[in-house]
Image (cartoon, rainbow, N blue to C red):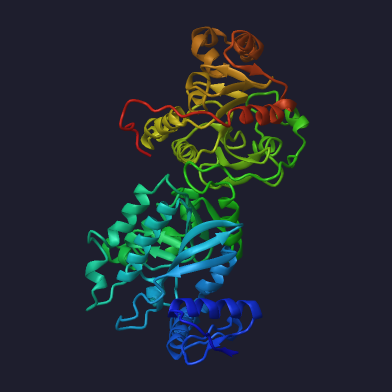
Length: 559
C-alpha cells in the first residue's frame, strides 16, 4: 500500500503516521515519493548479500576443523565438540570469539576453543569447550584470550563455569606468535590459571576431561572444583610419555602415566570416572543440581522424596560389636532422599566416604567413615579427601552431616612418612573453620582424635547426636586395656585366663553412651530410626545460620 500525506509534516512525524497505519492494517505501507521509507513486514525479511556472507562464514567455522580432524576423533571414539555440547546443555544461548584465529596462517576455526553461555535445567552457565578437530584442541593465543574473558565474565555474572576439556596443551607451532606469547605473558597463558585460583569459591567450576591433557594446561582440570574423567580417552600429566622417557628414561604409556585409574585411585584428582560421553553429560548435570549459582546464592531444591531404604531399620544395620564391618552407604541411603546420593572420589581413600545428597529436598554434604575398609580408620589420603570436600561445601554454603564411626587416625611408621599429622591437621582445620550448618552423628566408634576431625562436641557442631550404638572414648577398649593393664596381662600365664581378664576389663572400660548423654557430652541420644527426621528438622532450623568473621587475614593451613 502506498499513501500520500497532506499537510505540513516533518519527516519524523510523517514516518510515525506511516508506521501507525501499517500496524493498523497489518500490511506494509510506503509513503509516495519515498522509496526508502517502507515499513517492512517481519514475514518478508530481506537478507542482504553482506549478511548472507557472514552467515556462511559462521556456518563453516561451526563445522570445525579439517576432514582429517574429524576422522581422528572418529578413530578415537570421541564426539565432535558440538555434539558433546548438545548432550551437556539444553541450549547454547550465545558464543563469543567465533571468528578468533581467522587470520592465522592455518585454518583454526574459533581458534579451537568455543566459549559462551548455555542453559542447564533453566540455569545459566558459562562454558568453554575445546574442539579436538582443530589442531588436537591445542590452545592458541586467541583461545587463551577467550578463556580469560570467559572466566572473568562468569564471575561478574555470578554464574557457574563448565569446562569441556579436550586439549593436548599449548599450541607449539614454530614461527607463530603463540609459542612465545601464550606461556608467561601478563595477560595470556598464566592469566587463565590465575583466574581459576582467585575465582575459586566465587562460582562453581566443573571440569570434564575427554582427552589427554599435557604439561601446564593440565592444571586447568585440576583447578576445577570438581573433575569428571572419561574412561579410555582422558588423561592428564605434567609431561607426555615421550618427554618422560626422553628426560628420565622411564617407558610408560599415557593411561599408566596419568589415565583415569591413576587419578581416581592414587592421586585423588578425579572426582568421578565415567564410561562414556553420555554418562559424563548426565553426571555433569546431576552435579550442578547440588550447587548454587555462586557462593552466596540459595541452594537449588527439589521436592522431598522418601529414602531408598527404610529409615526405621537403621539400628539393624549397625553391628553390636565395634570391630565388625558394615557398609556405611546403607546408613546414608536411609537418611538422604531417594535417588539423591551422589558419591565423589569413590575409589580414592575408600575408608572415608564423601558426597552430596538431599534431605527434605535440600542439598547436604556427607562425610562418613567407612567401617567396610580398614575399620574406618583415617589415613593421610582420606584426611586430605575429607578436608577438600568440607572446604568446598563451606565455600558454597552446603550444610554438612558427619557420620562418625572411626577408631581414629591410623598409626605406624608408614603413615608417618606419608604425613598423617600434616594431612590429618587439614581435616581438623577444615572442620574447625567450616561455618555452614554442621551436624555430627556418632553412629558407633568415636575414638581419639578421630572425633575431632569428625566434628565432635568441641568443634562447635550445631548438634552432636548419638545413636544407642555409639561409643565415645579417648581410645578403643582393646587398646586402652592393653595399655593400662599391660603388666597384669603379662603376668597371667594361662591363655584362657588371660583372654578372660582382658575381656572383663574391656567391658568395664567400655563407655556407656547413656551416662555421656546424662553428662551432656552429646546434645541428644536418639533412637536410630529417628535419625532422618531429626536431621530434617535440625537442618531446617539452621537455614539462616550466620557466619562468624575472625580477626585475621586467613589461616595458615593450606589445602
